[in-house]
Amino acid sequence: MKIISIFNNKGGVGKTTLTYHLASILAEMGKKVLILDLDSQCNISLYGMEEDELERIWQEEDAIIDNGFNANNPYNDSVKKLFESPRTTHFLLKSVEDGISDYEELPPPYSVTNNLDLIPSRLTLFMYENKISERWSGMFLGESLSIRTMTRIRKLAEAYSEKNHYDFVIIDTSPNLGALNKIIISTVDGFIIPCLPDVFSLYGIKNIGKALSQWQREFNTCFSIIPEGKKKEFPEKSVRFLGYTLYNAKKRNDQPNQLYLALAHYNHARKIPDAIKEHISSSVREHLTEEMVQNSIGNNAVMHTHNTLPNMAQKYKEPMWKLPECNKLDNEDKSTISGNSAIYKATREKYKQFAEDFLVRVATLDE
Image: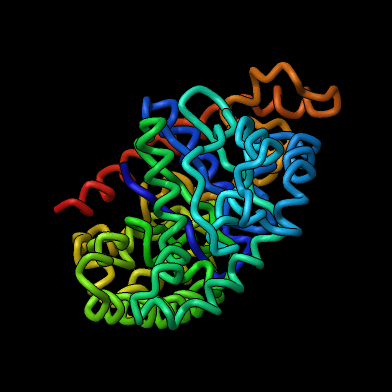
């Protein structure tokens, strides 16, 4: 099992669209996948479930999230009842946030489709992020609660995988360089940076590179000074880059460049590999070949704009390639989707190409 995150400190780069469709195609390829939504905006949760269903889950949890667990009697009947149905990522982190023992039970994940499950998010995740900041220095002293706070997300991924035999746990993150993302990126097995072909992505890579180097130094320092017995709580290597993707680039078949991009987009896109080499430390990407660093994952498979296709995918809770056969389409969308059926269906092969390259890169983590 591998724990993977899709991460960028800028919104609007296709992070959630990529996460959902990568998970969906891996599931169709026979891999068993769990999505952990750790973005308080909950966008990927709404790719997988209806809004009223997510609201129901939140309402059932509200008393625990607002007031905390009862430390004197945390296993009362009303709490036990909550573990019988899907819960949010914040609920699963709440015991650590409150400083009490973790529950042995794991609530079932929400089943999206065959081989694909989801643990949704909620807007209150900032409460757990506050605890990360409060307890950060205690990790360097080997304090048990601090270490649990930093590693609980990874432990949850491992526990769910042991129970349900997942091949991948894919984590969707918020678009920032805050404390929550620091521990996610530092404790997953690898991460991907989605990019737009623009100047903001080039500067964004620079900012991300600085943060990654700092996070890696901090975790390496922690690992070197904490007691030997507590090192097993952390992955052997922290902060490992799997590559970048290009998203929402404007396709121009008449352009004489290898990516078939409009000139302005091409000029930015070709600078991304050099920006990665300059700003993302070689220690973060040492397992990748030079070709993997140079080329986006899947080459140009998913870089061209999908226009409104992702909006339709989220609306109908289906990957883009399944929409022409979806029996839930509104009358106003039927003719549009039917008229562009070939375009929708073609996205499957593109994401399959992306996933195949992704699997090759994931294999380098074990080398």
